[in-house]
Image (spheres, rainbow, N blue to C red):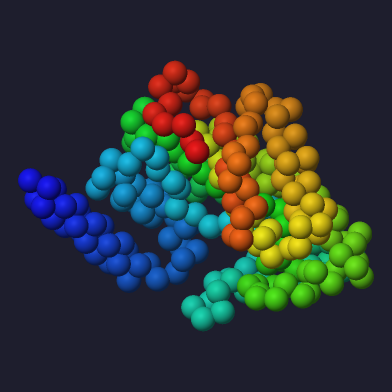
Length: 258
């Protein structure tokens, strides 16, 4: 019997892989897949439909809000990954920033609403965002980096520019978190993927405060209620998971979001 169940699980897994492969072949652009409501929902639901997992994570990207939130357009190239043609490294570049335009993130909101309706009270719906420091590394460098020398040099040569950029990102990401919760996310994961690249004393100044003292404090002042950070923060690839109050059926939240 165990072998039959294992075989069935493998068949389901292989079927999901094949479906995802077909979607990837038909829609090769990661941005198209992560910014098109139909594709977001279809990809997000695959694990749940196959295995009835206790949570559904929206298929998205931490850079998705860049054009809408920061006025920073970007492309994703096959070899180089994210490419930002106009990185922000000085005070003149800061002038290009603007408040987040949530209407331009409609595909994320609509996808969360559909996912919430699809799973009902059978699973938790998880949204996510990038932490301010991690988002800033891309905006400053103009893409991915292994050394982070450009942004690290800024906290010596242009601290005002870096602080202003991080503050703007924090404001935008806070609005984006609230937006995701209002559209159906039970929980929001905050990924500080590159926070672990900072020495501890630098992390305390340039990464941690913008998550805990700024973003979380601002969220707690809203009607979302108390947000409880997990202890899973700041590992080599640091991740902070925050909890939010569900918008409906509060007594039926399937599984704690941790």
